[in-house]
Image (cartoon, rainbow, N blue to C red; front, side, top):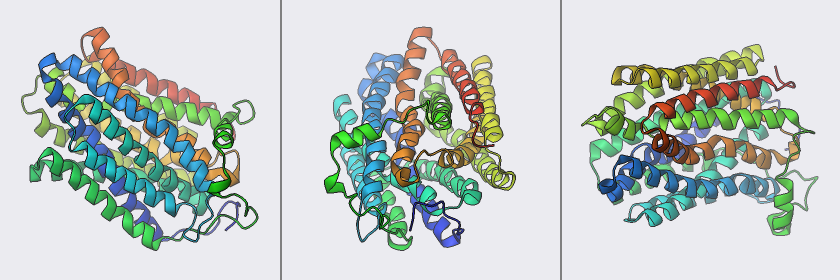
Length: 416
């Protein structure tokens, strides 16, 4: 393997293993974010009112987000430099999965907000590690003309994993400990096929000295700075990704609270499932269609702009007409927008990387803007709700941030 852009197309077996691994990763992360974690925090702070509960949930997510913020680029840099007979990405996929599963098991036995925050930080650090290494496989092994459709198989498992996790947890009606243990076991079982079957060549022979043991913390920290003046396309793509993902997080991360407290739904947990299903069906269809269309046309920016516009429209709709029916329509728009965004923006991100030798580190930085907004979205949303006394400001904020993200991506010049 060299640092040259790959030209050989990956096959169905490669894509299948990649998709199944992401299915496990997304199931574990999003089942927790959408249902288990907010319910767990609410059970501790229920006597303090819904705004206080949302603020507590926001702080838990923010603390964990700091761990992910550090883990994404650091693990990316370490995986770039790993010289191992098992490859350079595979060891970090395995280690990240193990830490993620451990964090989930720890979450199951927590009964305080502080304990939940620490355990979720461990889990998100593991999520960041495995996600960083998985994403680097795209730049390592997938040709540019296939990256849109392959990136769609990051978002399609997100949809399937979310609904599968919610259905499993609700149908089995397990205890808190059992629910978290279930997500941990499924995570490990679904990542294993990729670890065992997908090839992962070791670090290129021309850089034999780049080993983990020789990397210093200062060197890693210095390498994380990418000058926006030298690499403006990277900076604009990163900014757009951060804004759109934060907009999506505002629109989706507090849905359980929105149903229960914003709409007064006495069956919020049950009604969350059809809402998420609508969101995810739209996400899957839009992701597959946009990923293939983007590969065929060679265009990326226009698709990302359309995705952000759909999210902005959804946010404004929910702010203006707050009913369960419009929530379903808004969910479909959010899902379609985010599906297009996930497929095409991931492909765009792989085409603006500054250094072919640092795919893992640079995509780790990019992935900070993919996952960290999910962690900090709840605290930003909680602040908007607390200041306005309702959910309208939350959805307006989601729409505005998504629109700003589209403007940022439009400034990219090196990719059509």
